[in-house]
Structures are given as C-alpha cells and as structure tokens.
Image 1 (cartoon, helix red, strand yellow):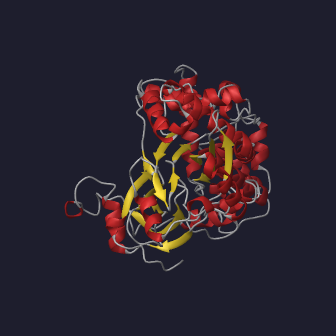
Image 2 (cartoon, helix red, strand yellow; image 1 turned 135 degrees about the vertical axis):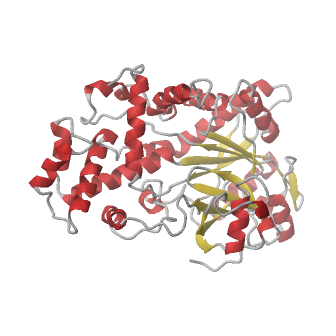
Image 3 (tube, helix red, strand yellow; image 1 turned 180 degrees about the vertical axis):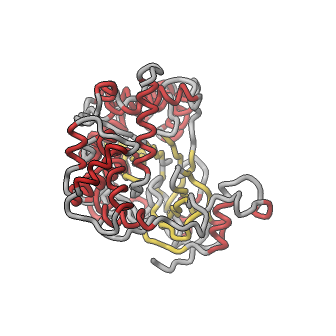
Length: 474
C-alpha cells in the first residue's frame, strides 16, 4: 500500500461507475496526479457485519491464499493477453476518511450535510490509482510538453484540439465496450429442456428477460457471437448494433469526458456527432452519415489487429461445465465445509449422498461425476469458472486519435521508444483517408469474482430459461 497524497476532494470528479466499482478522474493542479484515475470498490455491506468463516475458508481454498477484495485477477490474464500488453496496472493507495466521504457524496443527490451514513454509498478505503486510459499522455516525441501544458491537456474539457509546443493535438475519442460472452456452452450438464442455451447467446437470452421485466424498451440487435466471430462484416454489424442500443455495454469518452448516447432512436445520431467531432480530419464535412461506419471500421480493425477478443474468449472457455454443472458442485462444496472443519482429499460417500436431498439436485450422471471428483479438482473447476466469469464481464477500452501527416513519423518513431503508462507502445491503423489513427487498447474491470455470486448466476440462469421457453412452467 503506497502512501500518496491524493489532494483535496474538489480535485476528483466522478467519471463512471459499475455495480462493483466507481472511477473518479483527477481534475486538480497536482502534476503528479494529472492523467490519473482513482478506482474505488463499492462496499455492499455495512461495517461491523461479521462474515461467515466458511466463506473466507472457501476463498482461500479456491485461490490458494487469503485474498484482498480490492485485488483483481490481472496476473491470471497476463500470460494470455500478450504478456501484460493490454492490461492496466496501478498502485494500491489508502483513501483518507474525509476524502472517502466526499467521493461517496458524489454518488448521491444532495450535499454531504444532508446525507446520513445509511444514505451514502459506502466505499472501501483501499483504492487503486491508475493511468487514465481514456486519454493519450502527451509524452511522445510529437507532443513534448511542460507540466503546465500537460495539465492543461488533461484537464481541458474543450473538444477543440489543444496545442503542445506548437504541435496540434487532435481530440481523443475513447470507446468502452463490454463484449460479454462470446461462446455457446456445450457442457453435458445442460438438460434437454434448456437446450436453447446451446444455440442462442446468453446476451440475447438476457435481452428477452430484460424486456419482460421492463428494464429495456426494445431488444438489442447486438450479439457477442458476431463480435467474436473474426469476420469483419459480422464484427462491424455487432459494433453498429451497440451504437444503436448502447445500454450498459457501450460508453463513449471525448477528451476524457463521458458522453453517453441515449437508448432510443437518436442514439446513432448522437454517436455520429461525437465521431464527427473527434475524428473530423478523417471525414469530409458532408460525411456525417458515414461517421458511424468509420468508427465501426476503425474499432473492428483494432480488435482484429490486436486479437484481444480471441485471447479473452480463450479465458471464457475455462467455463467447461456451465452454471448447470458449477451450481450443484458449489452447493456440494459449501455443504462439505459446513459439515466438517477439515477437508478430505476425496469427498466421503455420505456427503455425495446428502447432495441428493439438497436444494440443488443433480440431474444426470455428469453432474454426479463432478461431485465425485477430488477436492483439488473441484476447487480448480470453481476457480476456472470465476476466471471465465471475469472474462465475460470485463471491458475493452480503445482510445483513438487522428495523427496529422506532418506528425505521423514522429509518432511512429516515438512508438519504438516511448511506452504509455501500462507498458505497451502506441499502435496506428490507417484510416480510409490520408489520415492515420493511433490507438491504445486496454482491458479493464478484471475484478476477482466472489464465489457467492454462483448462487445469483444460477438464479439468473433459471429466469433466462423460463422466458426463453415462452414462460412455460418447467
């Protein structure tokens, strides 16, 4: 845990949040913090609530050690994602209590004086300080800048290009994509009445459930199977579908500032407007309608060039048994922990027999085979499932910036020697014009999933299957 002065609360501004984490961008004057974000984990339990020792024990059994909840699983992804090339590393910092309260207040309406402790979103005091991957640091040879110019570059909310020692700096457009699950499950644990999941992506099945629940007003045409297909046409179709219906699977940032399209018929026009503003050197003034096509083409080329989706899907494939097999196994493991303070290398026959009377009964011999495996094999299955779940729920952030021909050689030369903050060189793709576009791709949200989520995953799976089968009682 590093001791870093995080400055005053007014220097941190809410940048975005998910179900587990909140991200604040730095907008103050401290040069050491300029270009950084603070990623803070939400605390879903009030302080003082005692955690079941069995939960802690199972976490240690699965991961082999006591785990800090603020840590992610980057080390498990490093060897697959090109030796850390697309991973984002930061430093663990302690957030002072007063700053933590101020950050929490930003998530709630009203002033700090009007909020009670119960009304605030509680946050962990341990956070992670990271480089802001929605921007390019002006540190390569084409954009040498003094600290004052660098601060102005980062903190400016203007969409107009800035200037660094006489060199034009074009706007930065960052697209955050949550690709979701790019495979269809093939596990023998899937029963015949749930056969639909072998043929339709989970995302599409979830769309039907969300529509029935009133969470969305129309079904998205996006299908992860298209994005992961490696076929350029299908990939661009998937990206365009995301632009048309972003929901929580697509976010845009212009010069580091969130610009979120709405989930209605105007979404494509809003995306086009942002693209036109950010990548206008690549577009003729009358080519507004082609802006979305340009962005889809650029993103598809970046994803194909890096091969990041194929690397992610190889981790998703660690889920060999589907929730249909993992859920009863998890119930069996928890029962083992509750019934004994020591773990045998092999489950006892009585434990396996007791599973037949539990809430989650195995439906076929395949599930029973999982229950009969040795303890270490069962822990490996659970670990692989949780790693796969992280890969299914992570985000890919792609920062794009056009490069003027006069500066292109400087950027290319700088890419050989200048590394950006997560250690990988800048890369460029050629636009359909005489302009080139440099990009930076980062995989984020690699949170370690808690094993207790398996119960919620099983519940959601049951709901998905119910609505996929047109509401029939199964």
